[in-house]
Amino acid sequence: MTLQKDQVKDFVGKYLQGRISRRQLLISLSIVGGTALAQPLLAGTGVRVARAQGATPRRGGTLVAATIDKPVNMDPAFSELYSSMQVYQNVFSRLVNLERDGTFSPNLARAWRQVDDTTWEFDLVDNAWFHNGEPFTANDVRYTFERLADPELGAANLVFFTPLDGVEVVDDTTVRFITEPNWGGLPAALAAFGDIVNQRAIEEHDPRLMPIGTGPFRFVEWVRDDFVELERWDRYFKPEQPYLDRVIFRAISDDTVRLTGLQTGELGWIEQVPLHRVDELREDPEIKANPDGEFFPDLFLLNTAQPPFDQVEVRQALQWALNRDAIAALVWQGQAAPSADPVSPSNPWYSGPGVYAGGPDLDRARALLAEAGYGDGLQIRFAAQPQVPTQPLVGQLLQQQLAPIGIDLEVQSFESARWFEELASQRYQITSTYWSATADPGEHCVLPLTHSQSPWNFSAFNQSPELDAALDALRFTVDPEARRTAYANVMALQQEQSPAVFQVNFKRTYWTQPNVYGVETVPTLELRMEDVWIDDA
Figure 1: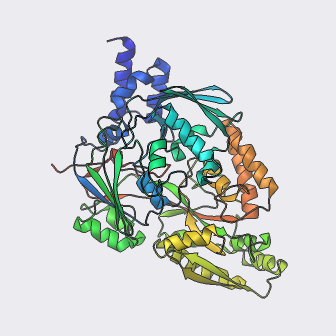
Figure 2 (figure 1 turned 60 degrees about the vertical axis):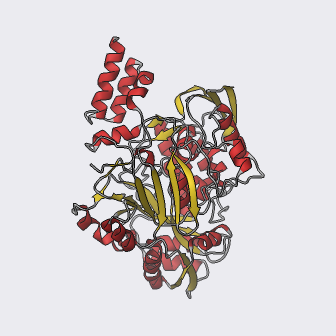
């Protein structure tokens, strides 16, 4: 064996034993030029998680997983609800993955390089197959992004790829992305939203109902309001994965019902327990809390297309009346960090306490309402989903916090699909929601939610050309330090205008049976069931 191969084998061995971090591994491999040699030894992130958790992956078994909400659309061009993404991201694959430590890892792309300031080249795997039997090639990559850009499709996820000018096929296993100059966000966008689709599958089946990808699991059945069943794809391009025979997703909105299902063995995986019981349950040997992370901002959306939130003074009054510490303590039971930013204070992107530092300040809030013509008070409606337990709670707490400044808030309940309609049609006045894409908080959260040209701009906000310009400038800033400065500028303008009001960044913990391994949260918040296995020994 050559010296280079010996070195690579040694680095990978230390990594799998947990003796060095992923970042240290990547740096070491780049020094000795051994990235390609390491890929067969790594064989997917599941092996890494397995060794870290002190177990050897086993094949077989069915995992019943309980999410909070129901899926509504399986077409990855739209990402209509996070509950849909939780399912279909196991059916599709992306070119690259984003790991827990913020580094990118190979997936459908074995390697990639930036050729110049407008060109990226990706080398693709040659052993991936779609679930309809079609081989994966560079043509599928081109079709995916040409379809996304088709104005007749009206794909919401196009907002994450608007700097993409085109995709060129070099050969079956090589593809080039042509972008506007100095767009630094391509790898992150591919990792978070770049699910690759197949033209024949899209044309022969309704992609909203029948997802067909190259992912680790094949779609079997979707019984509305009941379950979605996936089964192992035996031609998956990572030969050792997935480990499970099948995954069944059930939507159970009640935290206590989910926990009971886990404790009785009916469920193997759940995504949230009653928040006031988290500390107690972490000590329970009959269930397991898996590696978690603060990757999930919760925020208020304000409809700026109609009174009263069409006036910036009213939006600012809400900011000054808001007590984020109370929301974190009373709604999230300490399982969230107060934050006026899409990320938590522990995140390197965090821009600081913000424009409303020192609040709540009720006198300022009342003065702003009077300036807007609401000195005698006003009434507003809060749209909540009972299926998301924290939404009615945060609505009730906001009701208490706004009453002293003369705002009478009514909490209204909507089933999830109807709630989304209220949002998309701008019939609502104020609501709370979470956002599941903050790996790059400027491009993946603030821009889609507040840029005037974004289809995700549910606040219908178009009052600040300065904020649009700052978001555009951030997008085309490549240097990391300059990008953080640009992001801080974006957040100052966003907070001043307040079409969206960030409250907290909450900790996402996945809970499983003790014999379920390979589970951890990642910044994209996808549920990577390909890494999961059950040890029945």
